[in-house]
Every structure is written in structure tokens, then in C-alpha cells.
Amino acid sequence: MENRRIGEGPIPPIPELYINKQQVHCLSILRKFGWKLVCIRRSDDINPSVILKNRAEGALGILETDGTLRIRIDLEIRRPSVFEHSTADSNTDYLLARYSD
Image (cartoon, rainbow, N blue to C red; front, top):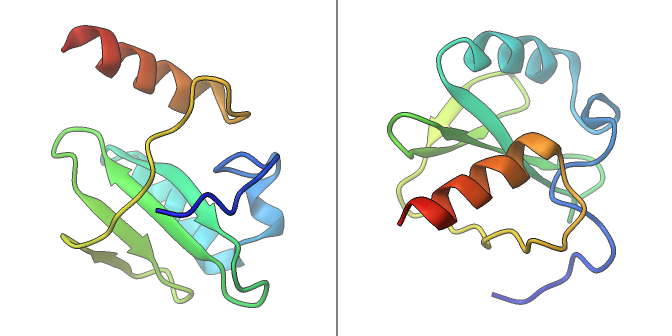
């Protein structure tokens, strides 16, 4: 997978600037059910892809612009680099998963 995200973390400092109100609302609900924000693919400034992961099941999904979560089994994401700037939550999850193996 090509690394096009040079100097940028998987989650922008203020995700609400990149996603719409429906996505913000549904993300707050989905977090209560174990879903967390993994990354926002910003290849398209108009419709960025919001990628979520379920902590319990490890399932990946795309949060659509209308707030619908579409679970995708064929979705590929890159493993975060320890040196990559991202949220403390995602770095902690990565380190715990890495050392629990």
C-alpha cells in the first residue's frame, strides 16, 4: 500500500472539520457500541472516507455521509507507525496489540 500520508496522522487534530453533522452524530452513538475512529482518508476533500473499527470484533466499516455504517470485509488499512502523529487512543491500542501477541 502506497504511503501518501506524509507528515499527516490518520486522524486529523479536529476530525469535525472533515466530517459532516450526520457523521459526527452517528460517530458519537457508535462509540457507545465499541466503534472507534481509525482514520479519515482525505483523498477527496469533498467526501472524505471515515473508517471505523469495532474493538470487540475487529470489524472495519465506512461511515457514510448520511451517517450509515457500511461494514466492509475487504477494506485495507495500513498499520500505524509508532512514530506517526495520531491520537493517544489509537497509539495505545496499537502498542497493547503489538505487545500482547
